[in-house]
Image (cartoon, rainbow, N blue to C red; front, side, top):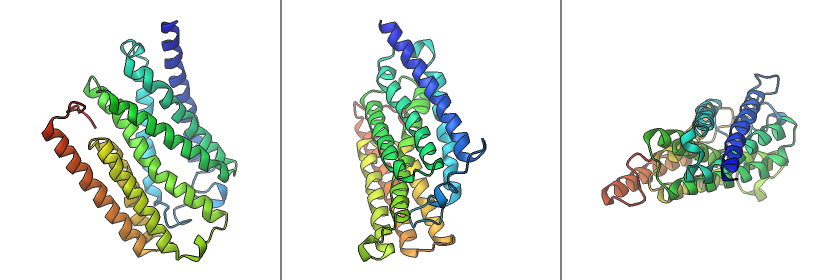
Length: 270
């Protein structure tokens, strides 16, 4: 029975990866779908809200999908079939892949309101996967990159995407911020995203991947607010400050962790 459950887990992860890749082609417009930035009336475009990153930011999905495909293949190897760490990680990763595909479909079918619970669930699943990855060490550099690196990048980016998604849905629904200035709201949301990045740095003992993708997303928010159609210098400055804060805290925690030689830290961790 145990062998059967392990085989089923491996198959579910691999199948979920295939579904996610198909969804990514639809979301990019390559398979006949509408590009995400143009779907749902352009509610998720770079100039739709002050929290939206500039278009090039979404190039990180190529790296994340590459990592997810690599993980789906890697976890099929015989050595990973009975690995305790992969037994715990397999289904959360599979759930994230399916939720991502469902999110793309919700936007493609103009169900923008549905995208919010889906991306919140995706974020929750990735937080769980991140916690599992923190609980035990990777056994090799390959596992560090393919498993921990991919989960970290995925989580950091989805943190930014969640903030952008929720803001887009509120703006699309006509929310006016209770009369409070738009820039004030934007700076507040950016501050929360930065705080999340700091918390991830502390909880993750200075792991680089979550900080890298979260800072990437916030940096492109700054670019969009300084050079796009929806200009906002306060929001851009807040995003830049958040990037610097997250980067500095991550490096500081990482250095401290390496110096103290924490029992829970692997020198290969990313």
